[in-house]
Image (tube, rainbow, N blue to C red; front, side):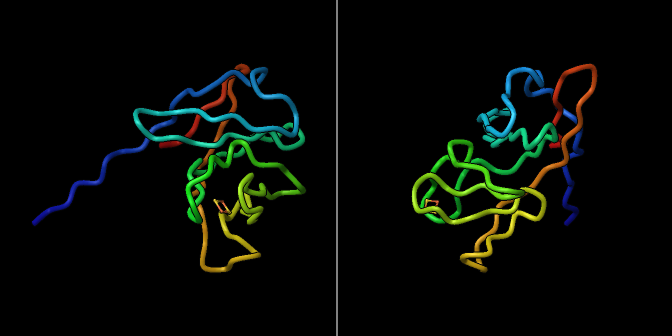
Length: 107
Ligand code: FES
């Protein structure tokens, strides 16, 4: 049986000006929810759903290159998706690009 992988493409999710420096917003593509962060002017996207108990990571707080979940403060690295506090937890990370002031996620 052949399994077809859906082709990914960059999808526009926001304007760069929508996301203040060092904060995050929740954006959606189809039914999927992403946490999109502006970390010192660089943009990062991870899955919004915390793998611990499902809190919205876009409502977490940023410190260096990590977001801390708003519910139980577990950390997730914005680049690797890994948690230092609970090493078996991780979130999916996504490539982001900015073009003409618009932000796109590869999904
Ligand atoms: S729900 Fe995110 S750390 Fe518990």
